[in-house]
Image (cartoon, rainbow, N blue to C red; front, side, top):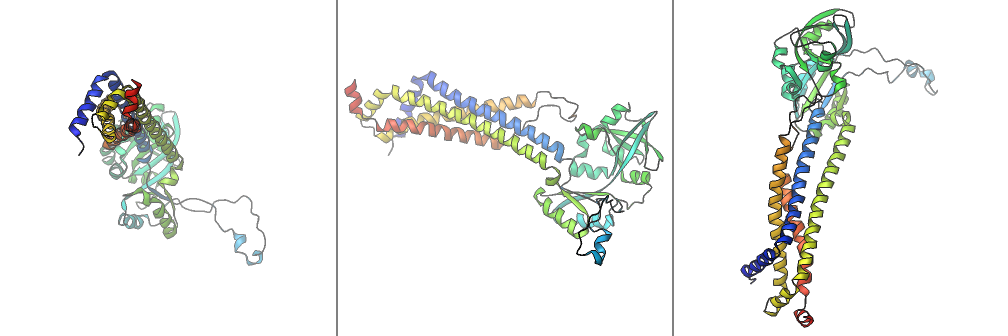
Length: 420
């Protein structure tokens, strides 16, 4: 049996005899793991914040009635021109309503469908905001505000006021932050909105909405469904859009295709709506993990170099060990034990260092008008990163110690003693 007590005692003696080299090797692991933890926690936290900024406001499936030209023109229906080539100029969209036909039964059906967490209606329209002599064009969206809060974290983007204030006020409006700034309006003020017919409706500002996307905040505002229906002069079953939130986002594509086939409506899934954004997120994650792994590999090479030099310096010790009865395997285990001890000590210190730096970053103030709900830098404290860090540290140090220890195993003690 391997004499583990003796092997570990000799390994400890070697490490303490060259304390500077041991400390340098351990610090290499510490800074490598610490930098990895800090970087990956911060970058994934930042990516998650950017993802949430877009994805929280984007439905998994958006259903609406798209206005587009007819697929078949009148000339296509005339039998006499069946074999002819048709050239039609200045095709106009067909006359079609923006409303979704039988929207309320459709909502009931979707809310009862498997995999659907919630289906909520919206009414979208273009309006003019009027305050004194100022007149700005924009969009007004009618929503069920409390359902928006439950499914899309809508309250995270209300910087002044509350969703409850909008729910309780049938003449209330959540005004976009860009509009409020341009028109010098505050919560409690009134703003008039004008529909396409030129009719004016005074609404009380019960809150300020800021999504973090300036182009949206400059035109967008929200009101209750009934309020917008009244502005448009439409009945309560007038719905222009339906947004779906699913339990599994991967089901969005097949469900959107099924809805288009079954109901003849346009259904846009979240992957199609945010294809470019998803590409950017993937690239950022690849860069994050590539740099993190590089840091760990560099730390491993540092351990390898130090252990390699240590073996050359300990040639006499190795010869004496073998001459006194230690096998080549015992000698290899001695140097492998040194590598594992360095990796364990340096890895634990690196985890503590990375955790400390991550918490410092997490408490660092970060204020920007584009992200009003973010007060500190985003950090993702995922335990998986710490597990990966310590496992990689042990693997890297094991491999870094294995190659030099093989040399020590094969050393001939007679040749070394004769050389002395």
